[in-house]
Amino acid sequence: MGDDTTPMGESSVPNSNSDGNVTTETGESSIEALARRIQESLTVEKRHKFWETQPVGQFKDVGDGNLPEGPIEQPTPLSEVKQEPYTLPEAYEWVTCDMDTKEMCDEVYKLLANNYVEDDENMFRFNYSKDFLQWALRPPGYYKSWHIGVRVKASRKLVAFITGVPARIRVRGDVITMAEVNFLCVHKKLRSKRLAPVMIKEVTRRVHLENIWHAAYTAGVVIPTPIATCQYWHRSLNPKKLIDVGFSRLGPRMTMSRTIKLYKLPDSPVTPGFRKMELRDVPAVTRLVRGYLSQFVVAPDFDDNDVEHWLLPKENVVDGYVVESPVTHEITDFCSFYTLPSTILGNPNYSTLKAAYSYYNVATKTSLIQLMNDALIVAKKKDYDVFNALDIMENESFLKELKFGPGDGKLHYYLYNYRLRNPLKTSELGLVVSAIIVVARLQSHLLPAAAKGLR
Image (tube, rainbow, N blue to C red; front, side, top):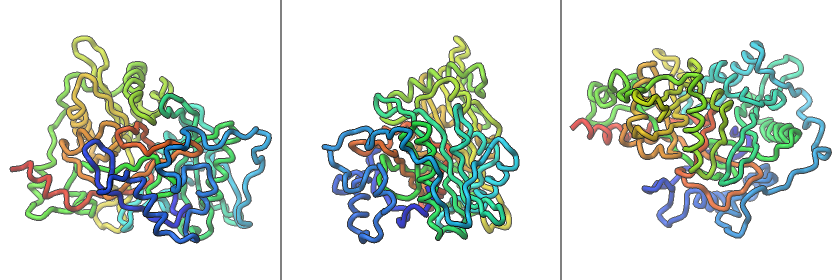
């Protein structure tokens, strides 16, 4: 979601305890603390007027154990859903973006490449590839009508974009068809036009027309009200470049050569039977992933078609690896990551930061630490500069061991028209949204602490 939806910037999150739940010194969960701080600090005029009109969890309700879990509003008869698009300012018009065509894909790519999410210091901006966009926006059963653009009537220029894709999300024991809403982007020169709320209402209208009444989305800003707040962690693969471009810094009493040595990896994976996933592996990977995700409160409900689309390797989009037992030929483990480069702004020597993002990983016979170390090794061999992971699922168990460091970015998860009674611990969340909307950098204080491993 974009900054146009809220006057709030990203809020800091307090300490993380050993079980993955983020708490303050008073014992509040991070979301309870955020809600309290926001309510106390905002004047009435600056409260989230748009979101307070929507069926989402409200800050005032956080911690109220009497509210029921589940849908906030019941479905409306389809005949009562608004049939005409919402009204745009006179100079603009809606367009349905056909991502099957090269021309539209080029237009969307250019809009996002020049106007999508940057870090707070304007050093990095996401640069989704056209292949990535087609992968992210055309899953099984997708609706072209959910790929929504705004054009300037006079020039025909594409100046705004928002999307939804269908997904089956399991919340506790209930599998719910939802829309995953993403890629909200408004041209930099039009941020004052308040287009974002209209675009959110329009994608919601189109989702409702398909008799779908719930959605999942993420944001780097705090709006009413996160179901979970997660932190990015980063593992340096090319530390010299990361330091040169300002993604991380050389720590006190650290030399470049010691830093490079600290993050050095073996030349090849160490797990016997570790290989690239193939089409024939889809049923086995589906069984592994479904079994693993069943333990989390919120997670996708994948079938074979979903696994084939989301997890089967696509060059420079998504990588998946299996461990096949050399003895039984059983597929016992699986790991994956997707590719999201960023444009490096204003650097004379480098133009692109190649980042891998941890996706879905299942370890049954191999330890998760060893499996993820093998993932780091293959990412390094494929010339990635950094490997990123959220502290969700069981990821916290390998982050420090494998020399990941916490970044400066938080990702907040939201559900639309669905209430959870209490915020989730990060370890209860099993959902990865592949289109990330917050640029995070490695916190500069990490390198000296990590260097202890050299002694």
